[in-house]
Length: 60
Image (tube, rainbow, N blue to C red; front, side, top):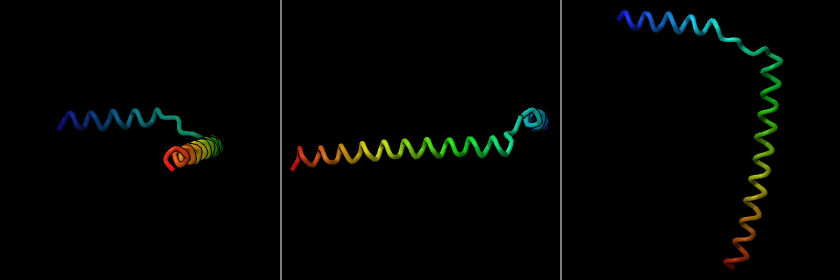
């Protein structure tokens, strides 16, 4: 039981050390992540379409 109390108190101390992002930083990084996901989705969709077309030509 003593180990658990020590663990919880150490976790609380570590949480106080965290520097949380500001609202502007959070919005900015969220927009960047959305743009990157969109770009990769477009690239993968294009590659899928090309491979599908190639496979249709080879098979049929």
